[in-house]
Length: 378
Image (cartoon, rainbow, N blue to C red; front, side, top):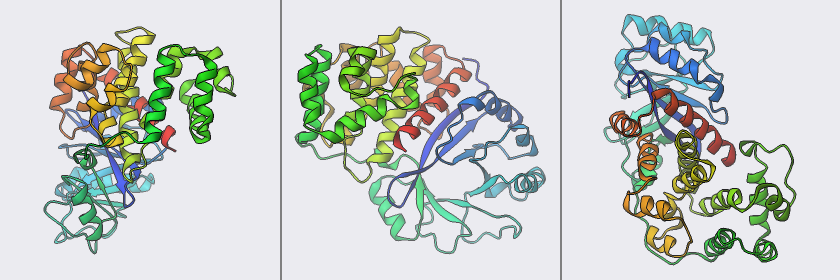
C-alpha cells in the first residue's frame, strides 16, 4: 500500500461510560495532506457526536483551514506546539471560524494563552492522577482499564479517551436467559425455521421485537418501504439478510454499565469489515464479515467466553475460525478492523498491506462504519 494519510480512532467516554465523542487520529506526512484526505471523505463524515481531530505528531498549521471543517469537528492542539509560530497563526483562524479547540498533553503547571477558549482538555492520566482546575472539560488519556477510569472520575476527570474498557477480562459464567433467547432465534433463522416459530420467540419479548424493527428500518439499511412485522421483513429481505440484523440484537443485549461503548465498537467493526469486504466478496460474504466483526466482542459484552457462546450457535466455519483462532478467510479483515482502534498507525499499515488496500478505501469505510454505529446507538 502506498500510504498517504490514514485514520485511526478511539472513543471519548463520559462519566457514565457512554460515548460522548469520537477521536479521529490522522497519520500523514504533513497537515496539507491531512486536509486533502479529510475533504475526500467529507460526505461520509459522522454527525451524531462531536469528532476530535488529532494530527498525531504533526504541528498544527493554517494548512488545516483548507479542510471544509464540519460543524461538529474539534481540532486538537498539542500543548508542546503552543509557542510554534504556525500554530499561533492557526489558533485565531479556528476561533474566528467557530471551530471547537481541544488542548492535548496538558499539565497543571502550564501557562496557557488567555485568549483561547479550550472546550476540552486531554491529559495523560498516568502522569496526572487528578484533574482539578483545568480550563475546560478534562479527559484522561492512557488509562489501562476500567478500574483506572473509575479512579480518574473520582479524582475529578469528566471522562476519558481510549480503549481502556476493552482490557477487563470478564468472569466466565453461563449465558443470561435473554442472551440465550436471541441465540435460539438466530439459530432458527440460520436453519430457515418456520416463520410462525420465529414469530413466537419474538412475541415472548416485545422489546426485542421493537428493537429488531427499529434496526431494520434504520437509514443504514436503505429500504424504501417501512417494515411492519417480522413476516413482512422475511418477505422483503429473506432469511440471509435478516440474520445480520438479528445478530445486532445479540450484540446490543448486554445491560453492563459500560456496554454502550463496547456496543458501538462491535457494530463499527462489523460495518467496517462489511464495507471493506465489498472489494473482495459477494453479498453473503459481506454479511458474514459484518457478523464476524460484530461478534468479536461478544465475550466481553455477554460476560462469558467466546468458546461458550459459539458452542451454542450455528455459524459458518470462517466466522468461527476468525473469532476463536485468528485464522481463515475472515481473519485478515478482523485484524484490519482492530488495527483501526490504535493510536499508532503501524498495525493498520501492516494489515492494509496484507489486503492490498489503499488508504482512501480504509478511511472511507471507517467513517461510514463510525456513522452507522453512532446512529444505531442514538
